[in-house]
Length: 349
Ligand SMILES: [Ca+2]
Ligand SMILES: [Ca+2]
Image 1 (cartoon, rainbow, N blue to C red):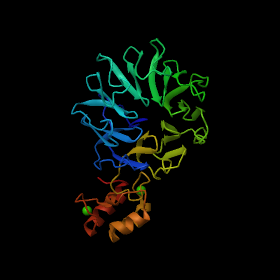
Image 2: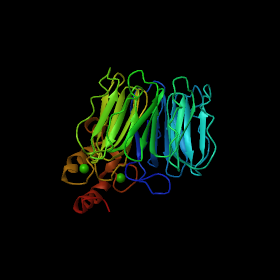
Image 3: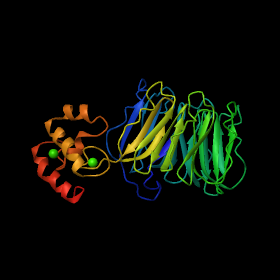
Image 4: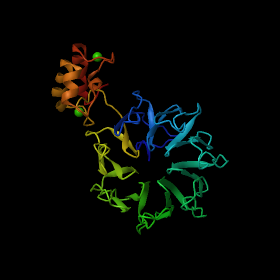
């Protein structure tokens, strides 16, 4: 459910900030992301979404029936979104949750040694610097029964279950197992994990993806290939980010949550229950959004000069303002000369 920019680590290490794109169910406003380009992480909840700015401030939008969008004015290094609650990992290493507390999901454990977080519907999990796992919130199905070991390097959660990645690259799951989502695949070559509501997802060191659990909506029909660098899941759909910055999506598509935008430049993915999010770094001069600036951008640039409406109708997965080379928030003839310079340099200086 959580997406962190794949180009770098949050928490001390610089990350290329980007813009949020969101698609799928929008009834509750969960795809109405802010439009600025200063985000370094995203998270999808059941009917709400979170974004983390490069300066550590967080913002939320969508359903707020439990107060899950009432983000406190604090500094965070990571964010996660549950069903009706949200969770933040403070820059200090401590935890803070807000929103609905109907299952004590706001009762975060104390301490300042947390390094990663994840949220299920009504429970949360966190990783400590000693590689142990903390869990709190609803426990009617064993979703808090994390193994008491000190060998985890990643955690994930969704629905009523949780998933951990051991230091040795093996998987372990706990909580609701009604669709055998806790029967994890064997192997010790996993590097990243994600949970759907009733299916699991893991990224292997070779860049391929495996899935297990419920397949009622073909959520196990993973995208093929071995060039994936990040994965996300929630509900009955999943997303993946390829090394070239393009996206893949599969599973339930009843609300268009799998209609991922084409093009490159994406740096992170996150999934909500019926919606999806990605971070994209727009490149000035890349008017066809394939990641580079070259002669293929000439035709879309000419279209951008004609006008925004014409451009957006033709290049639905790119951004008109990528043609604004001189940075005055408009594309016009003054951008022609600088655009030519971008072409000559294969990128805008
Ligand atoms: Ca291009
Ligand atoms: Ca301009």
